[in-house]
Amino acid sequence: MHSIKVIDQINNETRIYPTVEEQKFSCDIAYLKSLSGIREIDNGQIVLSLKKMGISANVDPLEDSKLNVLVPITRPDVLHPCDIAEDLAIAYGYEKLKKRLPPNPTVGKQQ
Image (tube, rainbow, N blue to C red; front, side, top):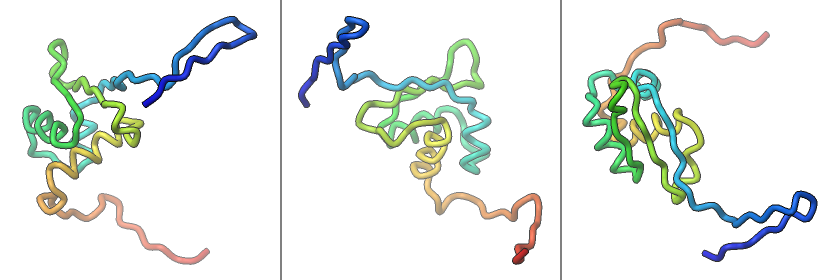
C-alpha cells in the first residue's frame, strides 16, 4: 500500500491517505444479542466469536453491558454495530439459531 500526501491549498493543511486506523465501536451487548437472535450466549463467547471474524473485542470494564470493539482496516464492510451483530451470527452459526415466528403477524396483499 502506498501513502499519498494531500496538501489542501486553501487551508494549508497536509493529510496522509489512506488512514490506517482501526475503527472503534462501543456496542450494547443486549442490542447485539437481540439483532442476531442469539439470546443464550455469554459475553466471553461473544468475544471469541468476533475474534473468529477478525474483530477484536472486550467487555467494557466500567460497564459490563457494553462491548468495546476494534475493527481492523481489512474489514471495510463493518460500518455500524448492526454489521458486528451480523458477524456474531455468522461466527456463532446460522444453523444454531432457533427459528421463531415474528411477534406481529402480517398479511401482504396488493393495494
